[in-house]
Image 1 (cartoon, one colour):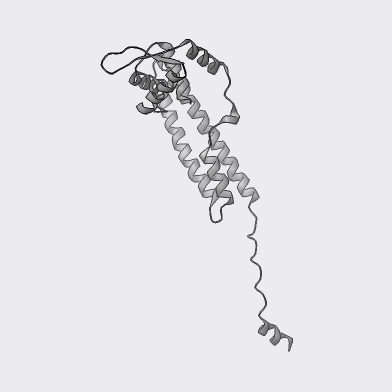
Image 2: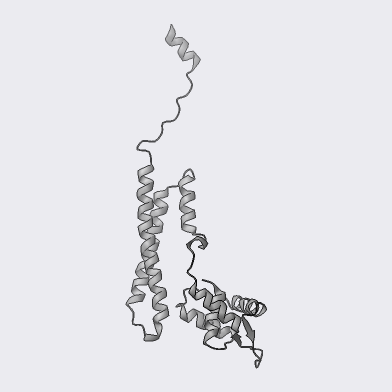
Length: 192
């Protein structure tokens, strides 16, 4: 998720300090994507530089920030533009399996099974979290949790597919090694 747009969305609620923004961001996402406070202030500095947010006079060393008209327009554009699937971040698991298939000595089935077990444990934890009582204000957390459940379920289905594909493409019998060149002294003995 873009921290930039997350902070702009929070500033749309009203002016906030950096620590308030970090807390509100983590509360909205159920702590799924924790933010480093340095990341918050670096992003606020960029937003201010680009004219999307401005610092207000503060007290004690804390300065609240507010969203500008340009920030509101940029945020609106972000909300109304679909997320492109071509701009997805690299998926470490996909890369790991692609390399495992092409790296000699790697047991791809073992890699898949270990990942499936880990993903299954995560899915069980997400399901337990969903079963807990949530208040009416927890809708954003509920949506994040649902996304994590669906992603884990999809990953398990994909891992099942990967395992079946690997097994289908594995040779039934290992390729025999090339026979050693005949020993000339043995050939000579056989020809007599």
